[in-house]
Image 1 (tube, rainbow, N blue to C red):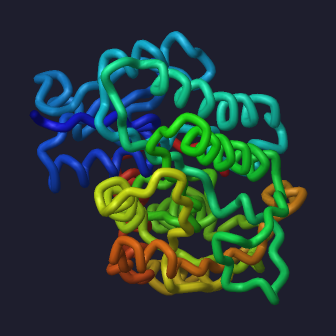
Image 2 (tube, rainbow, N blue to C red; image 1 turned 180 degrees about the vertical axis):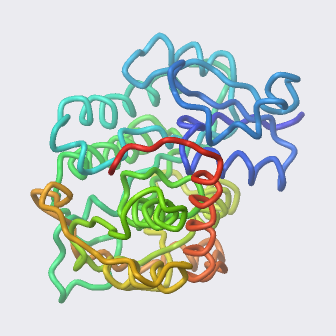
Length: 337
């Protein structure tokens, strides 16, 4: 019988790329859960298939509404679950901490309970935590392995600690096949413009079309990150649930190329058609507290699955910039952020 998967947050960057990967590399039916008001830009290319019920099905659901999660689980009866939905922007969590905690912690609990209480299914479940759980890490603890202590630097990181712990608890207490990932910084086409590298690419694309002055506005440029491609992330997530899945397992996943946010910006500027762009920092673009050293040790996951990143930093940045060039040329309007 054909396998079925439930992806929460299918309209996000990661969820949409995961749907693309599964359509190309499996014969699974894909049930994508999203809120009725979620923008469909990232899955616009899937809508014709969804209208024809060709392996893609959209389900209304909200992590803050248990009944909607019950309905989503009952309708999809999944063999695999990728729980990607979240309030995913750390900066927003400072101004909306209660919503962030409710969505990410209690939302994960609601989903896992709905899955636990649905009869006749025993799915393999991926709970997406975040490298932000490690927060402020001292240099002597780099690279960060799975046993590094948590030192959260935002309400978002606190919420992802809760997500992480709830996933592992359900595996240990109820025997659910839950595995948790702490994905380090990943980006590429469809990345939201609230994230640093994506807003840089958006601003550069707008400058190239003479839509804004030749100034890229930034926040903290000193944060050190290890960068990977979203398309590598979804391949890793597929391998997580299909290569000897271990209930209760938890893994760091990330790339191999590290640089500061400022060095990333310099690379984007170097591949721009405009050579007169200046950089200005704005106070409102800084977080009150930042997780400024994010370099992973991914050996546990790589040894378990054989996954290795293949896409270069340069290609990821080129594809991100080209994505924004296409959107800008299409005449879309954007907030100044």
